[in-house]
Image 1 (cartoon, rainbow, N blue to C red):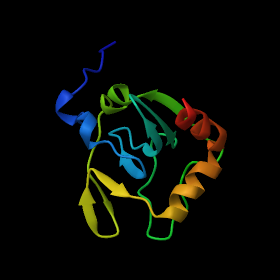
Image 2 (image 1 turned 45 degrees about the vertical axis):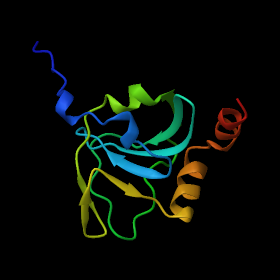
Image 3 (image 1 turned 120 degrees about the vertical axis):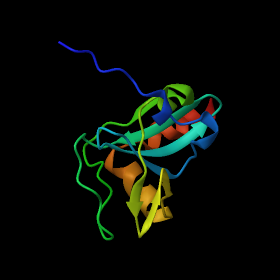
Length: 118
């Protein structure tokens, strides 16, 4: 079986990762960064193989468990630019209601409060 080699050209720089932004991996998985503090972040991952989100789509994180990881680890996934509201970019800013929806969908409120209190 052939092992998939990671393409470091598709990794993000740690400084490119921001709270409240939506990212899209080459495995077609959306990731919303919900909170950041120090070297860690909490994000909501969608399922892999997602279809592109439409303009009125709900956040795709329903019943998806949030993840906590180091910012450096998050950056080392392969990411791709994607279209959101007629803009092609590697990341897209979430509105306040979209961010709140993502937090609710993956039940991350307590984890975020814990991270921010550390």
